[in-house]
Length: 286
Ligand SMILES: NC(=O)c1ccc[n+]([C@@H]2O[C@H](COP(=O)([O-])OP(=O)(O)OC[C@H]3O[C@@H](n4cnc5c(N)ncnc54)[C@H](O)[C@@H]3O)[C@@H](O)[C@H]2O)c1
Image (cartoon, rainbow, N blue to C red; front, side):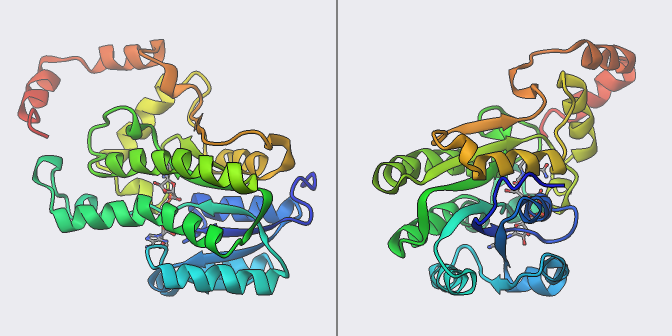
């Protein structure tokens, strides 16, 4: 049951691939809260994924757009305003992809054309979305734009590879554009730094199941799941957070401010055998 927090608001949601996607949950929650939305994803994702199913359920339309392609974005915003009958109130950028991660390229042996793709898809696309929206004056005053990030932007996580660089850039774009868009049109721009979450993109990260378990043990409130992330997004799209902008907001059960927890320490003590230590030596170069 919704509370009409987004009653009458119009939104665009990027990145709902399948029911595991964080964007999928956000779209469902936004609809429940009274918003009308347009869903978007790449033409390839629309062929392989289930976005149309979600659109049918939410009684809405899907517009294909590659978020790295400015012509596609122009078309997306223009058509969305036509279909929704006015300017947009909120946008969710829920997009991430690294060919280096996909192809198991080590961070000290990156393929640089893959790196360019990682940065373009996972970070620069956010700038492209914002720049396109601003040029078309597509977002209402006090509108809200949110992108999803990860704590690897600030701290090093084994296996997160060049996505860490992309997330740092993403968060920086939220600040830089947040200043301009806020000053000129009162549009707020934030990133949510989400706990590890079981999704298609999440599962691509090396050792993801153990990362998930570690984060769970380290976080006093436990990991935040996709539904809880959706709830947090709704608050940021709502009028209850009008003066929050240019922030990276941790939504991680407290993980980002922890050093060592009792639960993690106990688990580590259980596993600390000679065998584990020699195995750790073998992975010194990972
Ligand atoms: N899953 C996690 O553990 C986790 C944690 C923190 C942050 N995040 C972030 O959440 C966001 C959503 O990821 P998810 O976990 O829901 O996985 P997901 O795989 O369901 O979503 C990623 C989406 O990005 C889309 N995409 C890829 N390239 C694109 C392009 N060029 N243009 C438009 N869309 C494109 C994909 O089609 C897909 O829908 C990502 O930014 C991810 O980095 C995820």
